[in-house]
Length: 128
Image (cartoon, rainbow, N blue to C red; front, side, top):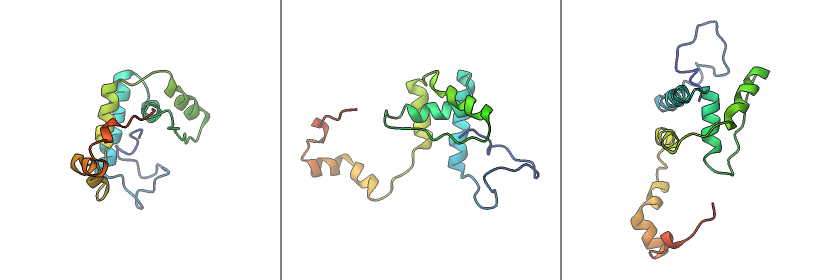
């Protein structure tokens, strides 16, 4: 999420991601580019922006912070000192959206939901 895989690494630079085993997909890189762009806009680090995005998804979401140094943990913990705007969250949600495929996309269809719930699904209130 921080964008470190968006730029080519030097041959002698070690990372936790073994490039030969798994290269980030184009979709992964687009998400990382968007996180970096938004982080620059708000004057925060990409790690802080990514963690803030995760925590704003729901009060039941808890980010898992993975670091290798005290400096990284201190930086990451700055994720809760600001709020992303609704527009920034939407941009990140849109760029990271994945297709559910069948049957997920099928059941999200309004036609199918109306059939399955007899047109009452929109009347159900969720406590969020």
